[in-house]
Image (cartoon, rainbow over all chains, first blue to last red; front, top):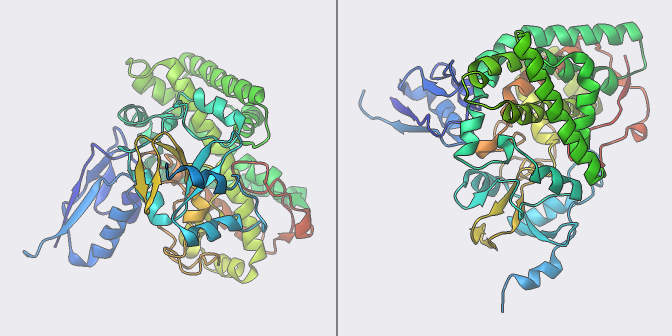
Length: 69
Length: 405
């Protein structure tokens, strides 16, 4: 399982994460800032989540592999 | 002895000239092979630094502690004397550091959210179809720049922002006065003031008669509650209008020309529209129309890729170099719409990364798809030698694109 964290404080609302993993990331309707739809994702989404981390222009996303089921 | 001084003599004049219209100046690849950072000399005799590789461009653009993007800083590097003036007078968040940058940008992020832009797609498609109707009715030959590349983003921005379409020629003149390489200081300054004054009047109009557009929404959400002054909104609005016109226009012209030059690629894309998402990213990587931004000034002595950039000196990050970095992209000088180009930096990186990038993506996906579907036998109506490339502009593209079909 993959744990996902976002930091709305540094988000600039570029939308790259929403575009890359739409089932995990969304933008708040009030201000376009990142919001998590899910705080965990199955391991098979790792490639896409790593891509979202890399594409985020302001390092607002971090992921960590959790060995627990 | 100061180790910085001898390099000043070796710093070549910047900007460089292209030798092939489809590729960045060859000096980038040569300098990139030698070192990640290269000193250059600007028109005013000042030294600046080019950061040329993908990794280091990301590093600098992510580093708001040691680099500043404050355009009003007298040390902020500029490509022309006119640009010095417009930078000095820049009041929009593109020229600010944090915390001010984020505070202003956040007033506008929802206007460009993925959801908002997705909702705009039917309108964008209708605009593309309407312009292609006009081109079909006109018949060949037609200048795809004048009849489509210029009008399409203008109509989209008009629908989104709320600026009357009749004003688009004025708005484009203001953008060009900003983005040229040869305009006078006065011309750039006057056009910057005129566009901000135009948006300021538009704000008054929309306050009296609100519509379903960005200006009306921002007035309601941020201006009336006192979170944003009308003058600040006018400056930001002028920036949004400039950014929304010129960049997309150039991607449409240049991207279409590249597809015409690569017939097998064009046929493949026409046959499989699902490739369009990746194709747009690859065209953005390959063209990288924004040539002399982003820029920063070093707030302290900073070592980047083993090279010391002294405090107070300017840094240019030519995105066309990072996007052709062979460390990041295999065969970077080959246009390949099936590659994963998603790590390209055509929209920049860091806190200033393009706010309108999702709009630009959908505009380009829709317009290229529509062109290929509606004009399947599209070809150049003149020899390539008659295409005028924008060597005179900060945003690269083509001035004309006569086509037949």
